[in-house]
Each structure stands twice: as structure tokens, then as C-alpha cells.
Amino acid sequence: MGQSTDELRRDIELTREDMGVKVDAIEDRLSPSRVVQRQKNKVSMSMQSVRDRVMGTASHVEHEAADAVKRVPEGVVTKTQGAPLAAGAVAFGIGFIAAAVFPATEPEKQAASKVMDSLEPAKQQLVDSAKEAAEHLKEPATQAAQEIKQAASESAAEVKSTAREAAGEAKQQTTETMQGSTPGNSGQF
Image (cartoon, rainbow, N blue to C red):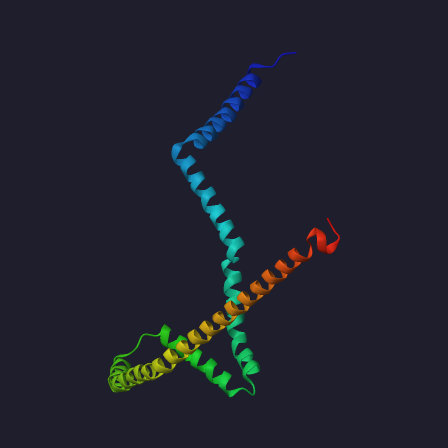
């Protein structure tokens, strides 16, 4: 029929414990620091998800990059077989990349400075040659432009003359037609 006092006390104790756990969970859930932490975690997870979708996972990317690097020599040999210029271009590109990755040493810097100093006269000579070539081309270009202008003027005059002649002929035909269509000549109105 009824519960004993001990059973009621146990039920009350279990209810208190259960309520204590629930209150602690609610308190934890509503704590400002926990709310901020959960929001940070959500943002972090969504950013990771976007990054994975765009770039793939880091291990996947690393694996693909390693495979691609391993396949480069085979591809270079296959693509450049029988084409020494292509092989030279690839070697130059690889050397250029290596030079960009590794900083220049002091002896390399000094050697580059010497080379630049020795190339300065050649550079100036090249600039002078280019200016001279431009000067030599200026006169023929001006002459060609004048010839084109003259040809265009002659063509325009010819078109104008032809148009005048056609207008004169059309006027003459109109006059003749008008005279021939008078009531006494044609039998029409």
C-alpha cells in the first residue's frame, strides 16, 4: 500500500542527486565562459570543414604532393625524350627554383656583381643600337604614312568623281523620264 520511510528517503535522495546533476549541467551550459568556448569550437569546426572541402585534409594534400614530386623525374624524362631544348628548359626551371629557394652565398653575390659590371657596357651598346634602329625606321615609316595618305586622297577624289557622274546621269535620266511622260507624248495621264 504505501512506501516505507526508508524507501521514501532513498527516493528523495535519488531525486536530489538527479536534480543536482541536472542543475550542474544547466549551470555548466549557461556559464558565459562555457558558452563562449562552445561558440569558438563551432566556428573552429566550421572553418576546418570549409578548409577540408576546399583543400582536402592536410594529410591528403601532403600525400598527393609527395606523389607528385616522386613522379616529376619520370614525367620529365618522358616528355623531354628526344627534345634536348625541352630538357634544357626543364633543367633551367629546376635550377631557377632551387636558386629562389636557397639564399645566395657571399661568393655568389660577388660573382654576380662582377658579371653585372662587365655586362653594363653591353647593355649600353644594346640601348644605343635600339635607338639607332628606331631612327633608321622613322624615315621609312613617315614615307609609308605619306604614301598611304596620298593613296587615300586619290581614292577619295575618284569616289567623289564617280559619285558626281552617277548623280549627273541620274538627274539626266530623271529629266528625260519627266519629259517623256507628259500627257501629249506617252498616252498616259
